[in-house]
Amino acid sequence: MVFSPEDAFDLCLDRARELMGVEKFNSWLANASFRGYSGNVVTVGLDSDIRVNFVSQHYKDKLEGLLREITGNDSISIKFTHRPETLNLGSFSSSFSSRDQLFDNYLYPEYVFSRFISGPTNELAHASAVAVAHNLGHSTQNPLFIYGGVGLGKTHLVQAIAHYVRDNKPGETFAYISSSQFTSDYIRALDPSSSFEHSSARQMEKFKDRFRKCDYLIMEDVQFLAGKDSTQEQFFQIFNELYLMGKQIVLTSDRHPNEIEPLEERLISRFQSGMLADIKPPRFETRKAILNQKLRDENIRLDSNVVDYIAESVTSNVRQLEGAVNIIAANMRIQNTTPSLENVRNLVKEFLGSASRRLNPASITAVTADVFGVNKEALKGKKRKREILVPRQVAMFLIREMTELPLEEIGDYFERDHSTVVNAIKRVNTLMEQDPSFSRQVEEVKRSLEN
Ligand code: ADP
Ligand code: MG
Image (cartoon, rainbow, N blue to C red):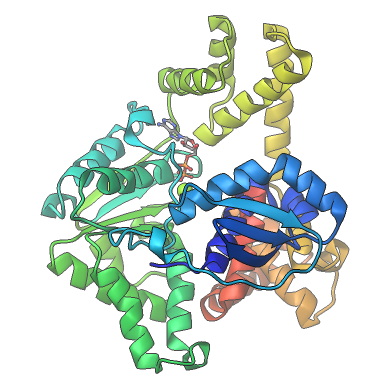
């Protein structure tokens, strides 16, 4: 796929939002606008000199790195400006090789097989991913369905497959997409008003063609297909076409296919017809190995009893382990010394406390209110205006999804009964299916809570 410079910059901002977290992003980059492109320089407008200075100092390298990754052009740089400038729309197309026909194609450079540490709780998923990367569409492993909780390495493994294909299989291509992106692209293809040139039938063909052409279809977070009937139908067709052509399908989900509800019976059975591999939280030895890798990356040396302490205390997932190391690294930079066991104990305790404080009804409601631009008190109140009602339903939906609290308890928090919560969840699913920009907002709330 060929990006216009503007699209590439949009994608770059999306990724930056994800990496920085919504709050920081909103403080510095929310108003960043694409102003033009010429001679490998992207000009980006910001709305004050303060922002221009700060962003140039703190985020320029990161943004340029992302943009280079997205476009494949290593000479690109960014200039920030406060003054309005005239538009100059060049094209990045020349920097794309034809086999880079991916879309949604951001891959984290570090998510490769050589950096994935396998242990008893992830080795089936790991071995299957390696096998699938080597052999295209072998029937016993097609589809490969990897499932497990957040932060356990699903994305790492499937991106490793994509990296492997990109680096070692010149004739083969992959498509890497989330089920939410699939849904919103599908909805856009359905809508004839979204294109001046093409009828909706043409657009639908173009939409399908992108998938038909790939050898590997990697779709993340298929649990979000739940409740989206027409998207499921479309995905089922594409799945079958690819499957019959001997192409490899790789799916990730936070739960077993049987637990994705509501999901059409025939998709449930397709999802289970190849290799089903779950990932569980890593055990002590694996946590230690992952920690040591991360410490090496950060150039940090800690006594082995300190490493053991961290590996013993931070147990729920790998992202959390990485978070703990980041805190320790930041602290070391400030203190300029190697922390003692005592220091690390305190840091880890505080870190774990704040992590568990983060995902609860109050925090989820607050972030939802923030992203939807409404008052968080109003979400707990009685108003039934749509501006309030919809974000309230989103908060209910996300609390259910992210905390797994029982419906009754969620209802209690909003002083409503559990059937209101059930309706809210249904309504949000439907809205997400109908409205891509709404669905992006919901995703944004999730992302910023997960960071
Ligand atoms: P998920 O997609 O399951 O939520 P990710 O793949 O995003 O999880 O993993 C979260 C973080 O933990 C990533 O930075 C990833 O590189 C790291 N990680 C997870 N599992 C492993 C592993 N077995 N070895 C090394 N790093 C891992
Ligand atoms: Mg993931």
